[in-house]
Length: 102
Image (cartoon, rainbow, N blue to C red; front, side):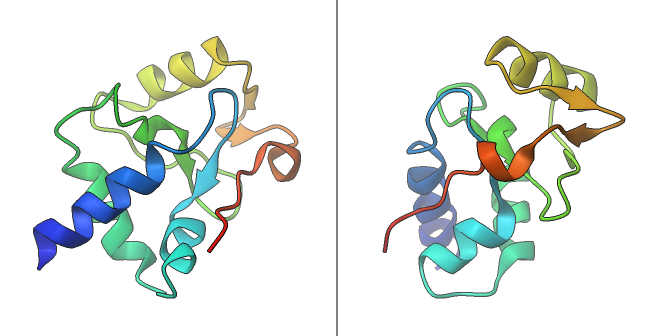
């Protein structure tokens, strides 16, 4: 069951366009769940870090959260996609926020 949940999360994350971000809560809400912590755990176990771009998933308060390859790498990847980070916060994150359709 947990593996199925993780795979659902990875499929959702794969939909996030380059230069956009989403939150753990947005992913959980996209399949009528409030299991945002479980989404975070799934991202931490992502076996394909670049092809499943979990670096595009941030916290609901706009802070960048963790990343398996380190926060500096996450910032580097996001900056390369045009997402600006200042003080570990995504600048103008509400305009960069990708929302999933149900």
